[in-house]
Image (tube, rainbow, N blue to C red; front, side, top):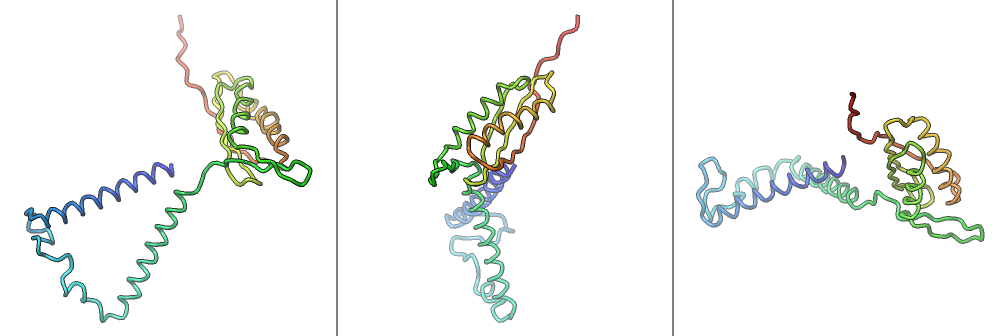
Length: 192
């Protein structure tokens, strides 16, 4: 959901800026706009002297401008850091027992867990993603179950089998997981 919202907000901001920039460019090139448009000709300024200096002597003006710009910059930085942050874990640090750490690629562990989970009875497809930090990973799994599979049994088999094997092989004390269960779509059976 967050990625979709991000794309919608970026698209709306881009369209708004494109429309405003195009309108200013069109006025600058001499295109006539309706009478309600604030700028009417190529020699018209965006802000007149009266508009620029209207609130200059008010004591609240500059603190309000600085506060608004600060909030705008902080929101832009928060949006940028959220967009640049990685959602997936690229690798884990595994303690080898000799004082050194080994690097286990996240994609290798993800594919091994997905293959083991898909081999369980009643599971048609499995998808596993790693998140969190290198020393404290988090598993997000999505299991698509066959129509006749028991969800409780599939979840128990995943927790005691796939998840336990991954935790032991990576040498982790705990490996929290979020498992989403779904059903594989199938056609209705024909009754004769």
